[in-house]
Image 1: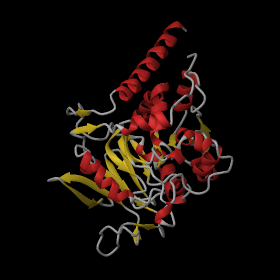
Image 2: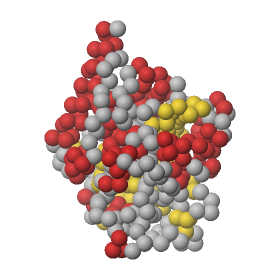
Image 3: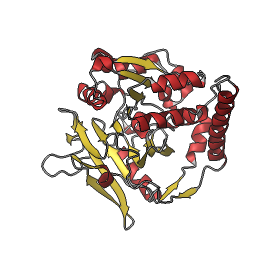
Image 4: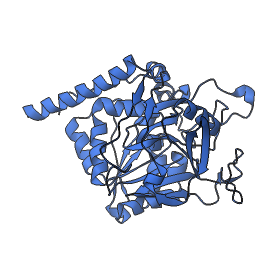
Length: 363
């Protein structure tokens, strides 16, 4: 057992060093070299469904059926691994985001790592036995940092390469990409606030727009780092306004002007982006509101249309926003960044919402 333990210690040490360096040097621009692979898809059997909302989207049968279909198995033969780190492993959030899959016959397992440090062998077993890995909505920065500290991100990458279906909504959509437009700096999403509430959380993990502008809360959206399995800067709830009274779509535009080396993908609250191999398609929940006006295919800030996905990139210093086609080749949708600028507010967020969980003591 000496060799596996030494390997485990090395993985954990490297993960902690990576987080430490990000904290010590929060503001930096990374010039991106051309990747060895030509396609934005890591391999031909890549499978993922990325929803614009957490509990709302994952409780909708249209999206859960799509997750099941991606596995190529009947529901009763599917094991779903739920990672609830972004909501600090709250039971009510797990039930809301997995109940539809459970009703269909899927077996639900979970890997709680917020305040626990499972042995590496247990994490390996949980990930390897999963047909689907479902990441919770919630605080994306906390979840991704925690996974990296534990070395869980490496196990998730191996699962992706094996063809395990990756899915989730909101934070659970952002986490698989280079980064995202995140509400991780909303104090209501911090661990102390969420675990301090004994009441079950109603509705989606994203905060609601205040009824009066004077009731708006003072917090900012930030760019956070994901796991970089896919390139792109993701904005979930793209058509919504949250408790800070700032529309996410317009704030996402402002963020892209500051992070012009990245391509943006805005996913409406009731929309999803499915990727299977080198093909993608846009899913929109029938009868749900969104930003796409049916006749003109233009953007509706008042959500008077249907849900869709928007492609955003900086051209000549301006944001060019294009409605994503219903289907196509992934390489026509995603592109590798030319540079990534770290958001120094991640340092503030980590200080205010620290990962004080334990580290594994055994392999």
